[in-house]
Image (cartoon, rainbow, N blue to C red; front, side, top):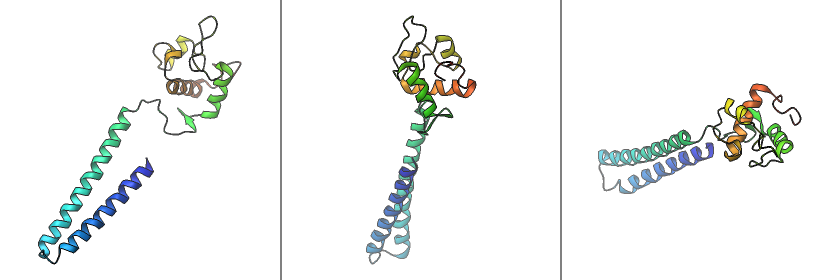
Length: 152
């Protein structure tokens, strides 16, 4: 996201430079007032484009599910490595895993009651993997490794 903002800012500077150059090339044909109007008009266009891009980014952020992690090293404040170790032990990392008796489901082998306590709806094994990671992160943050007595 930061790289995109820097790119947008750079594009704005380049656009302003191009506008200024265009205004300079036309300056021998324009009066001082007309020249400043042209540069101001170009600057307003660039500002509108930058603001439009910012609005698009704000909309995308609002649509992103809350379990979509912005930090690749943490999920819901829990280190990803911790969750990976639990998932590997519980299900071999398989988000569709179901225990032989059907009680424990998904990558972290949630039972439906525990899944519901962290905001999950429906079958944990049918939830997107990123959501399972998020809900396991919440559970770990709340209860530590206790919900996973063998693998935690």
